[in-house]
Length: 235
Image (cartoon, rainbow, N blue to C red; front, top):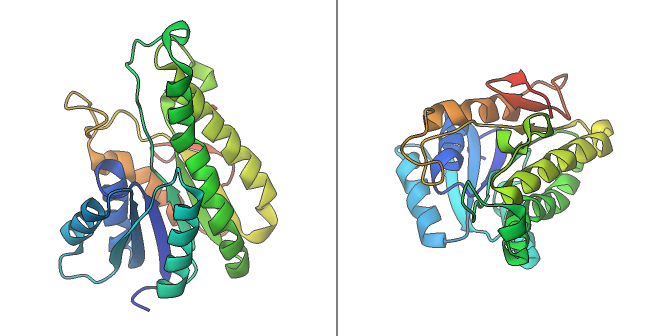
């Protein structure tokens, strides 16, 4: 094995996901990038690989149960059981000023399919492997827009999908508390990515930092919490 730990990063072919992969590699963790477009995933892996050998990419569509199952089976067979899962794959298919009354059901379904159900599908396949390891770190990439504490108007499908992801984090963390698996959500903030746009104030390095921290928590680290900049924030 080229590294001690195996980490999966979904949607890892660009933006925050790719930066998370890059930072995990620096920690001598073997990273498997999941990308819906195989060519883009392989190009991303080549970009961050350099002289290292601790990154690969496989095709993964988190909206497809068979694709998720095939992906996780391949990871285990080729590299070993994953000890880290970053549910980063996400979509934002609506405008920031979208309203509930104007948002079609199809948009809600599209958003939840990836932002919530994609994470559920991944955890359903990965958690049993982590249970065998008696250890695991699951990081769900959420958003401040999903905070009930600051919930407001605009982007309703995205907001509610991320609030649901946070609820999933709490539920799963309680379910696996006896297995050495820590499950947390984090908000990267408004980051300069293809999704965030050029006007965003934060770099991808800043956006990915908390994910790296959560991926490498000690066994007595926090679980079932929501973080930004390595500090807990209200749900």
